[in-house]
Image (cartoon, rainbow, N blue to C red; front, side, top):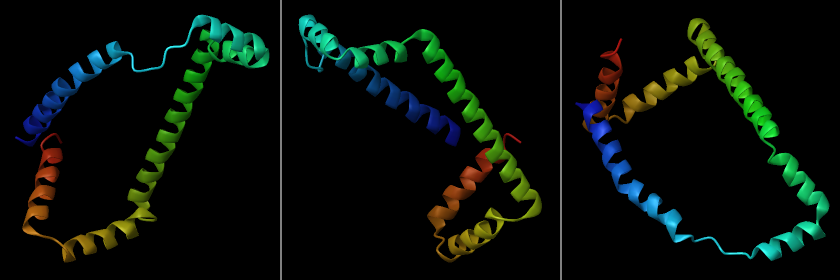
Length: 127
């Protein structure tokens, strides 16, 4: 039930926002600059133009994308490994988790208990 509501809300939000962004780009809200003005600025600043040419080179962009992707994978795997280590050995977040659980138990309301139980059951159905 919760999954169906989440999907429905996502679809409605997408259908509402899609036409706005589709026609927003057609409105051309950006200022217009004549091509002659751009050429004059490029000729006045050759080092900046050369830097932009290098930055927009497809091979440089591909290298940047691959480096960024590799960094994201390494950082993600490291974080995941640290979390698994903490689950196994109980350092770090385990103490924080216990104090957060006690705080939540002291300040629990029927509504928050119901919502958190539904979220827990949502994850439990797929296991």
